Image (cartoon, rainbow, N blue to C red; front, side, top):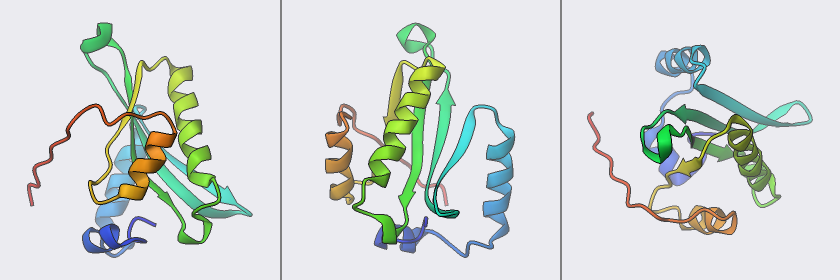
Length: 132
């Protein structure tokens, strides 16, 4: 699912690449990371990663970072993404997080409208520096 759109197709590799397995093992071992899957009829149709970040701002409040949100192309437009994000927000709230944050590539205008509709605000400008 990571490569199942034009942006992902350009940057993702072979799903069997051992770097994915190493990353999965590291994420799975970290109590501050969660890999979430959505299933329909026993088939994985959605994924996302939640990372809980400690911070000094906001009185030392924890933040939830939502990453790698993907919905299978066959299930898009059916409300699954909305349910996934609402579930993540509820999970963060139950954990005591003060903020839920995410980034979205500037080219994903449909995703921006989607996040806006869920109450997220484009309140910050994000920067990245590719190292490879």
